[in-house]
Amino acid sequence: MKIICVGRNYVEHIEELDNAVPKAPVLFMKPDTAIVLKNQPFFIPEFSNEIHHEVEILVKINRIGKHIDRKFAHKYYDEIGLGIDFTARDLQSQLKEKGLPWEKAKGFDGSAVIGKFLPKSNFDDINNINFRLEKNDKVQQSGNTSLMLWKIDTLIEYISKYFTLKIGDVIFTGTPSGVAKVTSNDTLTGFVENTKLFSIKIK
Ligand code: ZN
Image: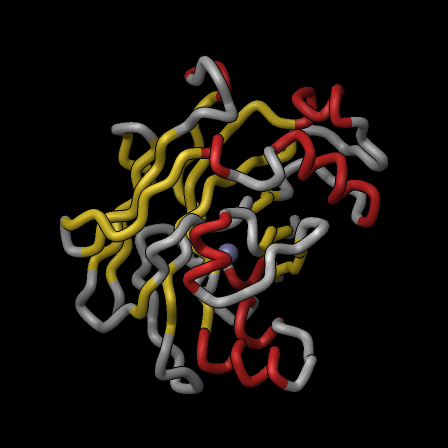
């Protein structure tokens, strides 16, 4: 499986990092080795002093597709989840400055938390889902899928122009504002509406 991530999909997050609003979705990938194994903590890697959490709505692909039309995109997923795109922000800033790819800052071991998934049928409107990340029981990030610059079906159309989507692939749809540094002993807990989908300890 592969993990396709969308950057800069929420205006307030673009502003907090002083980035430009893109004209098309910003895409990058994480390898499957980035996934934190079930019930394991996140270990802060030695190459970064600034690991940020980015909580994101996930979409799990359930059939193979290429050049998927937006109006058929909804047939390609039936589960919605929540995860964290851990980012070595210090390293990413250096790479961005030099115009180099972000992989080391975004795709390192442990950089992808994939929580539980919920059936899409649980939601009346996929483009109006509330989600949040609590850090040590305080809300640190919150968002609603209505605030995405590119909505889920549009992302599937766009991504599948470049990358064939396969069963089990996961799309990270971008983070709302409130990204911040993690420190050891933090606990990060993610909720979609009021259902807890993951909890992870930082070491
Ligand atoms: Zn992200």
